[in-house]
Length: 68
Image (cartoon, rainbow, N blue to C red; front, side, top):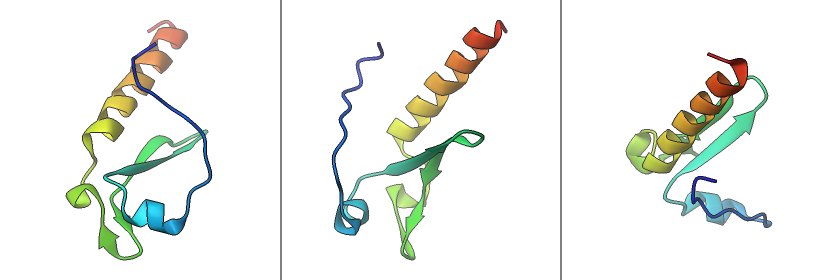
């Protein structure tokens, strides 16, 4: 719907360590950017542009479904 390709696959800690950015999801937390992994900063230690985009899309979806 939003033109963001996605796929599922197994990954290793090395994939995480070398990623441009990462995020985790949860029922109550929504989407949370990972800004540090194993003591090293990710995305310059701040939320990356994809995490920001996904957070905004998620917030808008929740508001639409809640009728806000």
